[in-house]
Amino acid sequence: MKLNKLTPEEARVIVHKGTERPYTGELYTNEAEGLYVCKQCDNPLYKSEHKFNAHCGWPAFDDEIEGAVRRETDADGRRTEILCAKCDGHLGHVFKGEYLTPKNTRHCVNSVSMKFVAKE
Image 1 (cartoon, helix red, strand yellow):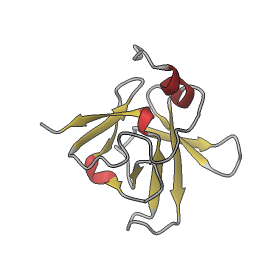
Image 2 (tube, one colour; image 1 turned 30 degrees about the horizontal axis):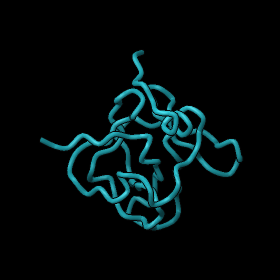
Image 3 (cartoon, helix red, strand yellow; image 1 turned 90 degrees about the vertical axis):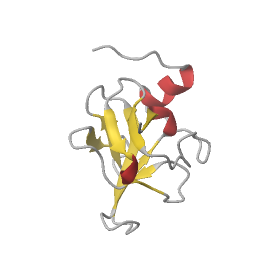
Image 4 (cartoon, helix red, strand yellow; image 1 turned 60 degrees about the vertical axis):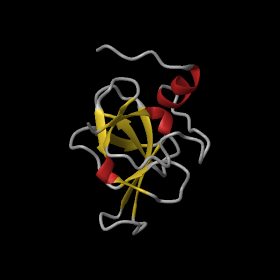
């Protein structure tokens, strides 16, 4: 599989499972229509209609494109990590039970893990 070249900061988050600082990501306040794709492999992950403002400091989504995201227990044993299903790139974490949307799910995703492709 062909992977995109990552900057050191992107690799720190995507490959080494880091976290970007809250409220600093360029996609946090993005409200345009389009797709959010994996920065490492261009796999479509989320549609703009999945995005909502959770006031958490990172882009939040209440759903994903079917089959695009996989889950595994985080190293801390308490959280659920979300990864790109195609390249295993670290995206962030998913939380349930917060009642922020009718779907009761929040994908908390690092902006640096994604690229935005505007709807044409």
